[in-house]
Length: 424
Image (cartoon, rainbow, N blue to C red; front, side):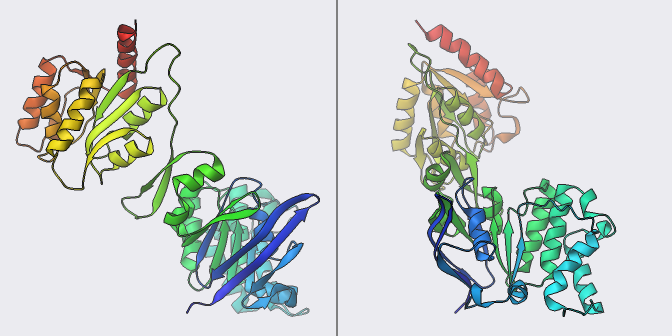
């Protein structure tokens, strides 16, 4: 059974009359990477500072390696916990190498100096954080992002059993964000890591478990899949999100879900049906929904990312089970939506035997104006996997009045014109 490295029990912290931690409890197992999420002011930084004994709680206790942190001397605690603060400002004119070497102080006697083994540990920490080339530079003369990596190197030089980081990538550009978090991830399972994040997607990718906070309390704890739900994010951040599974990592990732704009007064929203698949319809559905169109979609496979997008946007979608062909029931539902639609948009989707029924039913429909997204100006082109049948259907649709449009802005312009034509 995995032992606990850190345990907090019923932590209360107040700043004057403001309660910033309210009966917060958590347990962190050895060797795990835990991310703490939440809006500004929810108590994330205070929790990290309380665990590291920078702040004394009004009530509650913190245990590190099975021992109350109050029982450790500062030097002993520094061999258990390494901390990287959010604020990287340092006013003293130390060199970068000197800053990193400060991480060895807990291991040195009052009158002793560093030995070769200590220098080796510092050099390794600088290698890991790509700060070796800064060794002779003054800490006051490097960028905020470089300072952040130096402070991480200093914490690594402590060789702690647990590492506490408050927004470790806040000053870094994207390549260094991934580089530094990969380094930190690589420290596990030898080192336990607890880090505050603002970027939900980085937390989802790198962390084993997440803690979501709101108004001084923990509201959710679990795996990224359990914590990063649309309901949780909407509750805590007030922003609707689409939560999808990354096709390469299998981890959840989040995309802001833009709420549909209210319809223009005294105008019924134009009804637009989107025929898509294979991820080709997401941007179109976002654009249409955000501008107040009444959007429907399908027929789509339930495991298609376009189906996930439609459901996330609360778009009515006709769907089939994964890998199933379009059934008679779905054809009927789809045909009914086409009858109600003012316009149909066909994206640059691949067409095969499983979804060609979408084009067959559309060819038989009457009424809606059809727009075909075709960036190269040629509908379908190399995306026909039906031996030419889909291409023939596209040609028939174009001969019947379907209009090819090169991009979404052009589509929106065309739909705006159509709205004017259909408005009394």
